[in-house]
Length: 540
Image (tube, rainbow, N blue to C red):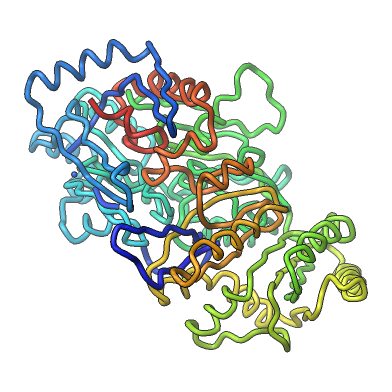
């Protein structure tokens, strides 16, 4: 779901949400020096949770204050609660540091150029901007290990970066953290055509992996609008979902193993390729979705699927959201094993795309309140198409569908996807908007859209769209989401944007355990600071 500002009153801030899935998205909150300590206080909407585990580190923070370390702040978003203080325990970059990195990486892989740093410091939505003075481009795991070992010894904060396609400021510096971009680590290491297991480096672009697999007769289980820019390491680190989660599930299920480097430079080899391995704790899951805060993912092994020869896509109009819900249930029941995507958008989203993107038209003859894209993928072209046609005819007779069309060729299919994936591009052209990444039970998804429209009136244009099959939508109020047992982060992570809001989805006791894990793997807190966990942990 998303909301475009029409108007803002003094002191009144309206927030909404929309998420980027556009393959044609534009290429590529404000924040400045480095950090390390945590404090032993958890604050969550009137709740305070005390943890004694952090007392020793607090003494270090007090020492830092007594030494008169300069405290720096950055503010972002619309709330004073979003102010972040630079951790005074982090060192600032010195010439000797740059010299060391040039020794191990070579001059051309140590970036100090202001223009290139400007791009690396800024997220693609131009919402978050850091002030890093250095970007490092390691070529292999050993170089990542050497970088982190040195940075940990010097208390230099770092931010791992891939394609920089996220929505929550997770891949850009908050202050002057050293950027470690893994884009040069882009090799496919192996592919087993019997098991379908792909092993590759973290800097591989998702679309390049899909192209490679296509030549082998396989497909990636992950498909995103940003596939032309995003890296598989970043996908894993944020546990990205994408357009076909309904078919293949999340990366927690398809990633079989990974390699990661922890803050002290230790390389954790968990690069298994087996689907069954119950030897102790399955530690790879700690790094899937941890946003580089526990370690930098350097290699991934992932289970891919055979490419099916038959793909069909239908664009359907529905009168109300209840019909959309019923259609989803019936699609799962009647299309079963061939159902691969189920996307929805409302009439406001359709109007936005039609008004702001050239060459786009509504595939159905009449305007309706809701639209659904249903994709099927199977091995029998005639059987699959007849099955989809029979399902749509039955849905029409039941009154669930008011109109619809099936793509006749690849060009029509591309034009259908252009509508769904073009929403983000249209939003960028329409004006200021706030993008979130929330998930809710399917039956609750559109209730929040209606609720926001009622509360905001003419203040904003509220739109709903997303992956209906996995309960994802992009909008609105965290409290509403929490009340209805939703998640404030469906697939982009928490980053700096939502770190303070984690308590809407997780209990204080759960967050306390997360902090303990963070301290164990990254005692000085140098890995992607100010992200994932509440900012109070990084403040003296």
